[in-house]
Image 1 (cartoon, rainbow, N blue to C red):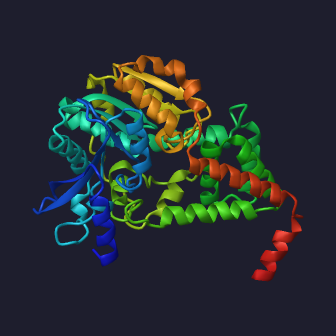
Image 2: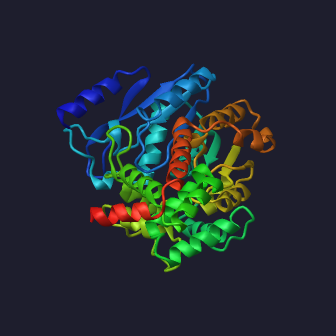
Image 3: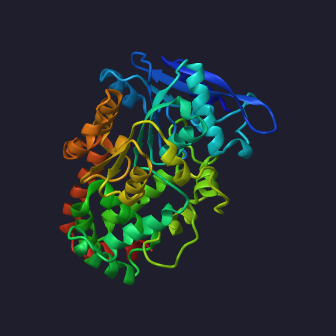
Length: 414
């Protein structure tokens, strides 16, 4: 650990509510400090919020979320995922070894944090990859679960088949009135070689994040030869995904979990709009899938606690079909299908996510399906609002530029 990182680490460790707990670093022996943070007035069943990833940190990245949750009266715990941020290094300051980084060890970390915090049972809120960890706690440590919220959930390594089907149905076949016109434009741009696999995934992400109207404007610009805004968005997305921000996003050590245990880099099927192509190109290491740690399809029917399954209607990362299947598997569950929302409620519509937490904590989970429209109308987080504004301004500005100008500028530049 270098001096700059040690300084940042010490600053975060001094924050209120931040604590280390000793954990085994791997099968070969040794221990390290796994950090977690607790905020808000303590309660018998705090909410453990588990971010997506793997690669997202908790302590620094979600400080604002915890502050606003505490104002709402929630008692929140967040665990810094092993191999990330404050939980990245062993006692000698070296990166944790690869064998220390498995889903089962991460799940056991959550149980150990509950022990250290003297919490018998908690309400687990997982989002995206975090839902698999939350469900894993339910499998390995069922006595520690008071209730569960699965936001944009994963179910199994075979989810890729559902993702492909949902994506192609909407954005290739156009089997929905909202996307029929979009699909026609996507097909033309793929046929013309404009939408490469990476660019196609940018279109998928834009559909979920800022909606079909913003995507339609960008596709129209591409069809008319205007691609400055699109290129800027693509470069920004690549920088965000590839760049490591210490104590915020650090995927280099832990990405192996997604590929090795959850099949993030599934074998491409050769058809258009296959996210597996981009995931494989994005990987920095081995993309081969070995085996997932849990059989959630077999285990979820045994879950005996209240579970809210939350899904955005426009989510093509973990599509609604996956959430519907999970809700059908878990006996005491409700499905909350939120219109006009994409992936990860906690990261895109924080206000709505906090309202879901409050309802479950208060024992009013059954009210949530009837409040789906209200939850969907909650304001976007600031970063999503800024992105929408930037896309809108860029589209207006670029529409005023003759299509030949960008092509001429590129020709001169090269």
